[in-house]
Structures are given as C-alpha cells and as structure tokens.
Length: 166
Ligand SMILES: [Zn+2]
Image (cartoon, rainbow, N blue to C red; front, side, top):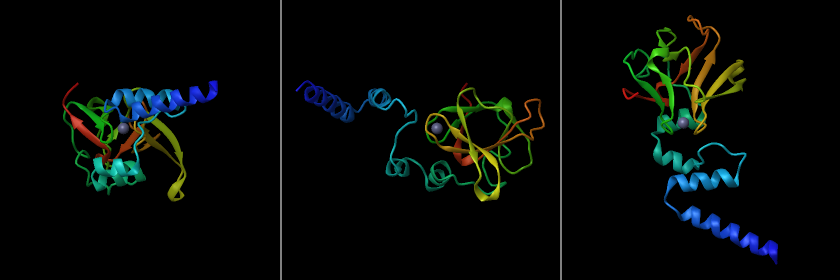
C-alpha cells in the first residue's frame, strides 16, 4: 500500500507540473525526475513550431549552411551571439575573427555554453559543437585557429542570433 501511495503522489506531482504553464517549474520538475537529462526537453513537433525550417534543419538535424551565405559570416559588430534555439549566450564578438572559410569563426566560446562531440560523418573526423542548454547543433571546432587559443569554432549563422546587449 505504501508503495502504491507513493506512486500516486509521484503521478499527481508529475501531472500538476505538466499542466503548470510556468516554464521554470516544469524545468525543475523535469530535472529532478530525470537527473541524467540536462537539456531543454522539447519534442520535434515543438521545435518545428518554434524554429524556421532552416533553423530546424541545422540545429536539430545537424545541417550545415552553404559557405559564404550566412548573415554573420562577415559581421563584426560589438556584442554577443546567442543560440538561435534557446537564447543561451555562446560567443562574444571579441572572439570573432576573419577566417575566410565561409562561416562565422570564433577562437573561443563562452565558458560552459558548448558541448563537444566526436563526429565521424561524411568521411571526416571532426569535433561537433552543440549548445549545452538545448543540445542544438552549432557547427564544428578545429585546431587550426590563427590566434593564441589555436581554436577555430566554425559556426552556422543560422544557429546563432546576434545582440548588442552584454
Ligand atoms: Zn541552445
């Protein structure tokens, strides 16, 4: 009986949190219930509703925008670049440099904002970079950067949003 009662409490808690429109409550509840899950949890249908088709393809399906087409490729204003999926701050404009590779390039990321994942797709061995908050695909990082960090974060413009806010 005790176990059943506990189960009932858990179900009630879960149901009430699910129906709560407060995003933080839902997030906290989700975090507590699935401690192994750290990403913003959204279904593919929810992402499709929130993102443009191009954003969805790149952020959720590991797409890559064509080189030299992105709006931030040659963009050098002062400010920050945020994840287009969840608005987490990913890069500061001070880290941006002119790489001539066709994609926005940075020599370092905001601490804790990027997750690194081995990527052996397309016959290449690369390190994929993902947003730590929503698990969105941002691009790749290479060890051929020309600055002292030696890194070149090669980023899709479509994965990020620029804002002059600090
Ligand atoms: Zn994100």
